[in-house]
Image 1 (cartoon, rainbow, N blue to C red):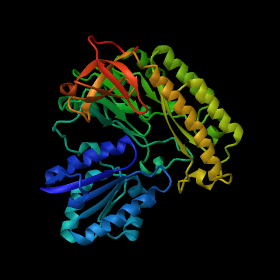
Image 2 (tube, helix red, strand yellow):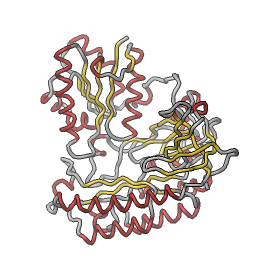
Image 3 (cartoon, rainbow, N blue to C red):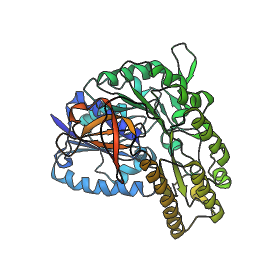
Length: 444
């Protein structure tokens, strides 16, 4: 059997895509390996969101060049850097055999056949008319207790800092029946929890079984009926697409976990406008208020960018004020990084790096304090935990609460794949410790 090594960068959608590429290549005799030096084929599945993403890939390709000089290995670059760089990747790194964009990776077998016939390089960075999900294999091998499922790709929002519309294309939604079929396969393989993925997942508008366009809320209601599927999540969403029926679904569906990742990016209306976000800070506050009114135990998560071009001290203070007003259980914060080809990259009022650093430290300290406070509030509570994998010690298992917190529990190794009530006994910086409780409870 030939050996396949995949290194995945970036978001959960890339994790999903990497798994699908592995499934796609399995019929060609490729089995997974964790040792890159032993691989017959290496795929770098790349992300283009952060600064220096391209440089990191070229650095990795330099290491792979040395490997290729020692043995015959096929090197492929997939994902958003492949889409953005295209033929330039091969020109700068001729050791690369295949460059394939995120909408074309279903063509990998064809590209490998082309290389075998004529050598050279294979490049596919078009947005093909043939829908890739129609040709991807239907894997039936056992999976984990939780799984990702892409339901939507691309974005039409054109935030001025973001490359996604250029690397992933316009918004596209899979059909309800196609998603339901894949969800049923995942459940048959052992999944108890499914996270629906999309660059802008709550913009989902897929064809329903009745021929009409269905919303994400309607899709969630449909999937909640699948026997054996206990938990549903979705990410990443945009405030502009938090529709009334989706907000209502959080209060109606017990299967929809009380954890919402809803990126806001800034608390300043001036910066939100410069980002082309299409909403104000108060719009965001009102959405959160409505969600919490319907589901009182919901935990909020968000993304923040500091140091966006033109961000003043007053703008930054507005972000801190929004954070204090909302209160987040978990968040991700970054310094603004210029992405070539985006409108914000050409803005004149770029912020100095030392100012970005200082603001990021202040924001992260506030967000960290909120996370610590939220986690501390879970101590002494009994929460339903989905056990996902063995722990480091014999008999120990690691699971996740409805709020995505990892929990270590002794004597639970036989419960992987099951949901059990756990009493939280201790809170650590990156995880919780608990013990099995006697009866099942809801997270409230």
